[in-house]
Length: 397
Image 1 (cartoon, helix red, strand yellow):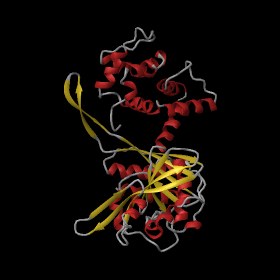
Image 2: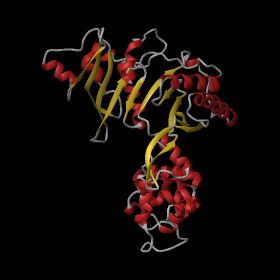
Image 3: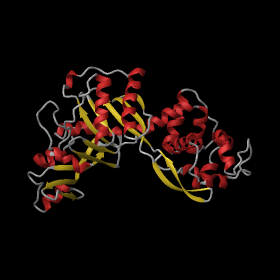
Image 4: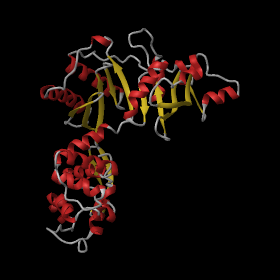
């Protein structure tokens, strides 16, 4: 874990929201650990007699927990939200699992109950939660475009071969010996959750009243999305070397070609300079009411690698008021837009960072935003010879 701070287990009120019998069952596999810390888990009891204060103090101040207890707390903590609760309840209802809940259960209680009664449902829900966390992706295409063969759900043998290649690489980089590849088929294509380790960390801690340290290996989840209609692979934020690894492994095992995916650029900001306010037209895109250009980052380059950022509530209007315009030649390396969607008063941000990166607030927005970007020219024709300057990506990290 990146941190050993479990919000839902460090406050008495959150613990009291969990049905006591369920809380005891959840912690019982680690009864010996708690007993060594002076806390005896009862086999049963009433909330009035249970020492919630003592239990929360262990979660707050003790970092030498068994790894499987850390993992359990970590996963329940992440799913114990209003959104997570509704997701778990719906999944349990779909397959006929009846959780033992009161009239107004708390999210933490629902998460613990599902962990105990339907572990497979909980695991899948948590994995898909990890899928939906990234908001920023880099996109990579196959140069052949329409000649790409169809892709089916990878077999277990293919997944194990991918895991073997990824494990060998991450092990050499001192990131642990375990990599798990979990595929999910969704409406827009195939999503892959890659669970792997990072370099070990040492964290200061108070152990049995003495100053010490805890050594642990943080867990990392990378998300890759393959969209068959575009022959496109999107990758959540990773290092350059990790990106090259994923492109090679996924190309090799899914399409028998290590060079299947090209690092050629997908996005350009030239429509802002070429078309001005006309580049923001969205009346022909169903689902979008308005788009406002609010920020641009310009790479002036030179000896000192100068960058400039301009911001305004409406940048085109601000330029017009001062009789200014975007510079004619300096690369535009980032642009932010405020997007008003149909049927909602709330606006959301869209960030385009050529050559390959985009940041959106919600994955559900991607289809309609892709349609707008394609029509206005922000998405390059992948079969053309048009390229993006190689040096612009350095400012998008």
